[in-house]
Length: 621
Image 1 (cartoon, one colour):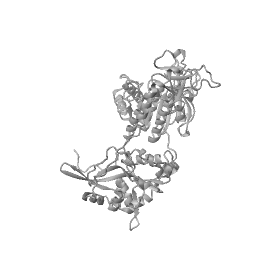
Image 2: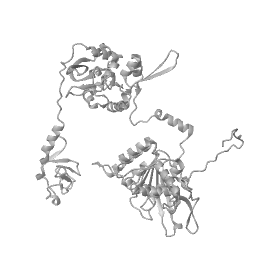
Image 3: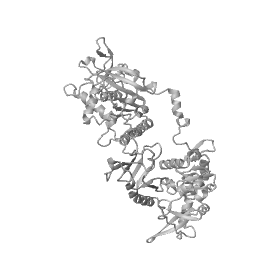
Image 4: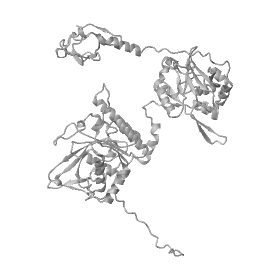
């Protein structure tokens, strides 16, 4: 058997010439070959003749399907190892000379520290110095913040001593470490700020163990890696900014150190005035609050630091207002289509996922058009549609106008005033996503998010789902990719309280098949992640009166949105609408209360006229 040796990274290196390559692939000079495994083929119980290893001659990598060993061809090993050594070589950093500092604070430095309410004692304690940089005839005075590890200065940040102009920079090529990290050694409580002036403000207020991120909210948290022991047994209080970048940085720091021992500061100072009235003052960071309200305000906020919630954990306090609303007002009322019989099994509620599927030609899209326009007609919902099969888009709009007016879309049957009213309604309430611009879920949900922010996305429709491009990600199956897509869709629906309809195809279908959730194409997660699942079964016949469409609900998560069961619906080719129906003795179906009215017409409003009003004293003509 072939001799192998370990490459030091957990792989086995083997020469191609030593492999027992299968006859079927022995002549290959590129692509994949099959061979016996040098590691397990001779083990007891294994088939010695099994070609259980696949190796790619182009990349040099291969693996055994039986024992899992990863192989690398010797011809590729040297190049790969050199690349690894180069990639993981320890980076060499510069050390600042720090011989450019003035012996004492400069005048502008003193003025700036006073402006920021930082005493010279605090500045000396933190090692803050003054550096003057000449730009031609002009001289600028900078504060220097040394980053010290033990007794070594690792880096220096310079900040212009100016009340109005912001300018700062670091020494070139130096390692980024946390500012004032020595103060964390042996501390039981450590404050982490986003900037050096905020760290100085906290030290000014009596807190010694204060560390700052080296580069604000954008800092790479790997700067803490070699100092983790300093923080291992301490309570960490994140005292950063309260703007969006600050909150994002706070969450990253919490994930790095662990939320269980984290707190965070909300720079909202609350106090009672001399008359006992409650007052509050909001600031963005520690230094701003120190400047505006003084030391006591900063201390109060830090001492009232809040517990950091574990990411992904929902406690009752965070949903208490929603719970109280449910107690007072009950569950939100779901929306129905005002269709006899269908109302008993199907209703729409915000934030839920609805999945419909059927064989081609069963009326998936016509049903979706009817649902959409019913929502527009009854509830004035703005609907965003991704429907690439409806090409050109004008054809899809023509179908929706047909449903809205109840008239066949042609000039002979749809009068111009009704056509114009239909256009105006579609213009206001319906928007289509161009599949030529985006056909991936991230692009679709981005457009939906932007429309939602403008109040133009009360419902999202994806018809059909199979047009959505799966992620181009290696190492995972299509089933896993479908799960990833569905998770994004569910998260969007829940976050923005938008109902999402997905129309899809079954794996296979014939007229005698009764479909189940497991028949949905792609993944069983379609059924698992959806709140309501239905499939359509259209029974065609030469006699139109004997045609019927069955709506089959096979999953209903909540009783408020319907129930499982089957109802018969009659489809009108003229109005493109559905109505509940009954079966007659002669096996024909007749609609119950079929609605053929023009939904674009507004109901007349009555106006009360006061006939007792006195005539004007002066004749108006």
